[in-house]
Image (cartoon, rainbow, N blue to C red):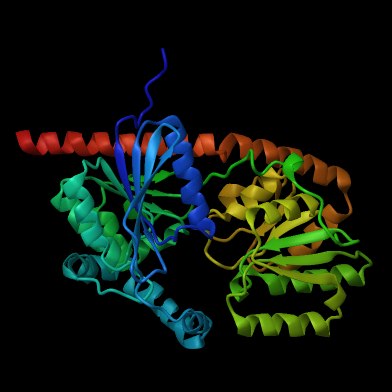
Length: 435
């Protein structure tokens, strides 16, 4: 007799700042929902963003044993280039520091923060969804929903979904895809206070107020897709060993640090080809990076690929000698380090945000302190010079990906978390009704 799955018969409503397709969040949701619906006879409704100012009606598609429903929401206009330029300004950085040290200070929170946040109404901001609360309310009127999952929160659009879920007596869970220090932000902390379950993709730096409530759901990738045997040979492959940095080309992702390291490697006689795979999100930084590459004489040793399809990225993982992520950005659990390990390619990364949860340092790759360019250079030299070490780390990386980060493991974690939040909510409601 077939075993009943934990989510059979349930309906889940997701809200995410993600589009129909595209980047890492979109790929994550597609992989997750496909894995869950392969195992469960359930319905998953996804409130997502669309660039179409007049969205189409919701659409349904059968997936596995269940149904996936897409509910598109228009977006408040945002000037991306202006937002990115401001992110790198001294004024913006000062505001970030001031906010972290003053506004989110624990003493300030106890004295005024909690009271202020509970009554403060968030205002819609550029880039947020239009009509998220109304769309959620329409779903609640026409369907029985067992759980709402917010993949974005801390904004007015997310708050409107929480309000409608509370009116409909539906539990709400938050899933943070970034570093856990975000839970200290006032608006995000407010939503965490209102939620019935809180989770993230790594277990590092969880604020004290959440430590008894927090669940680590890690991340997951399609380890069958990211298998070395499926990769295709590269056309016009570089003649030298490839060092791949798959990330948006912005200052925080560490491309400049890799150029510094590659300069030293060339000086000691280790030739390599640096490959940057990712969209250009800061034209000013790209100009600085190209000028630096020219000054140090690496023009013939660096390639800019731009944004790649997942198939193309898989091919480059397989062809690369090492994958690096010298990131300063407070990451959640970067998919690229999991994908590289699944492709049996060792990884070197700065231990920033939740990166450390994705690498077994010395076994599947190397973790370094953030900004340790000397260490990056040394570890690159070690891996470039040792085929046996690369092979050993590649084998261990593949094993770790299959064990911890497969879609099967991801679906299992999510099923147990969802079922527990639903059960706890029902138990709490029963107690409140009988007390």
